[in-house]
Image: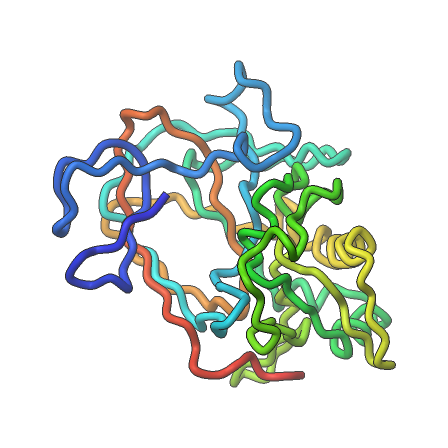
Length: 276
């Protein structure tokens, strides 16, 4: 749940709890995203205070009509200091990670690419990802995998007839590997919003379950606990991160009266990501 600052609408206020007054916003209530609203099989309610999940691994982007921002900023304004939680992947592995409650977690998409086999690197360099139009409307009724890395394929996505009008010129097709000015390659894919894969030979994989399985296979090993950075926020901390080079996710849960305030800003880029 987010609000925009009236005098600077590009800046959003996110967090949790009741806020009487902040930067021109009066009597607002913020709500920290909870995996229970998004995952098909959430952590049991009785474990909610001690166990958490990756909510959704993502990049900050509309992925329809606008180009992905190059940088996102996060400023910690008010942070309730509480205990750590055990983050459980719950995907058939034994992977677990201790995180500060409410931590933002990051995984390097450059590392994701570097750790691929040579065969998978070639596939990643040559393949383009097509994102669903109005992706967040399209996936609204679908549910996430327990590791937060993409969606389950249960036929719950909206069909075109139930969605807002689609302008095909606004549909985004991006290289799976983004190549910023450093010339390093990143396996940078928003796994929840993908719809199709465009292969080097001109063919298209449009079976949604197959598309998701391919991308999950490539990305999942690179969110292993030892490869994830979990931020332990303190008030006044400012993070600027390369939105073309990392995936990130919310974690944790807060009670309705715990107040947490962050300022977030990202602006759509003026150009699409560079090809490898």
